[in-house]
Image (cartoon, rainbow, N blue to C red; front, side, top):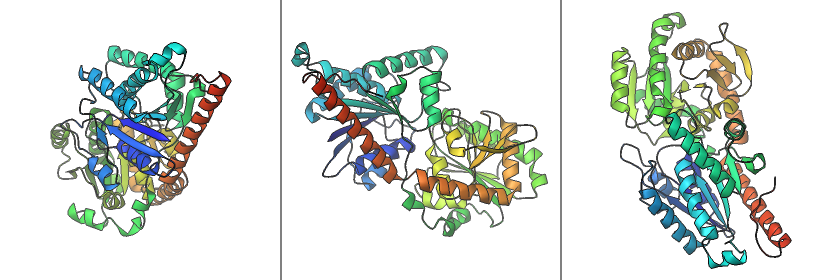
Length: 430
């Protein structure tokens, strides 16, 4: 089976790791996989090193980038020529830009052939994975409406299966925003290399020493790109409100750390100073030693406005770290069922973390205060998160699920071809 996997860029984040793991896992005697990626723009950290470490050599299309431009036409043409050369059985696109240009190139590849006049489009199955979506909180209403229309057209004309990473995400994309037919969706959760986090309890001391964090200090960290959608501004406002309203009541010494880099770093550092968070907060930039910094954290926070299933929370749970997060996208599925609500309903304690409304610093500060003050609760949440991730989010399970999806799609295509007298119809059954 020949698979071409396309992603817009290998920048820091879960999608880059996801496509590398899949490309590596589907490079066997039965599978041949090729990873295609665009350019990482200035201001974003490049995770190409991760592909190198995993033995994956991507093909780069430098014109493919996050922003809309005339280069998109060049990207589509280059992908079309690549499909002609590679003749894939499966084209699987990941993230919004790659999904647009990849499936547009797929339409050309499928139909731009003399054989189409005889009713014979080129045989190939097209799959698209939403790691998140851009249908709110990214752009203004006009641009968002345009992108949503494009997604609806591509889902109808150029996608045999739509993969989402959580049931909550499926409800949002299909039911709330009306993208795609319900019978074309498949829910396949993310996976991660859980072996990275073995012996987590014995690690973390070096990172805490680097920050001069005392053994009894509570260290609260947020991990992710410093970009608008991650909403680090909320983390800083919540930290400041926690210090003002709750810190003395908890009786704890609390430090904060921001792990990650991006275009907003200078702005966020200035905000931290204006909120009088310095020296209680440290910006450490991008780190590759996640096996060391996660165990050093006592609480892991996420403040995003929009998410698919954030890999940072899964990684935190794999280290038995308690998490607090805004209730957006697939975060809802990660945190699990509610256990109890705060008296003023500002936050909810769930099976595997604390859930707070999006963009509400007071609620976030209150939820954080509850975690800081209750060591037993932190321990229980951490244990349940670790058990959940171990049972649901391994890379082995991810690769197995994707193999099953591909085999099913190709089987259905073969049946459809036989039923139509040798002419593939590319219709996907439920």
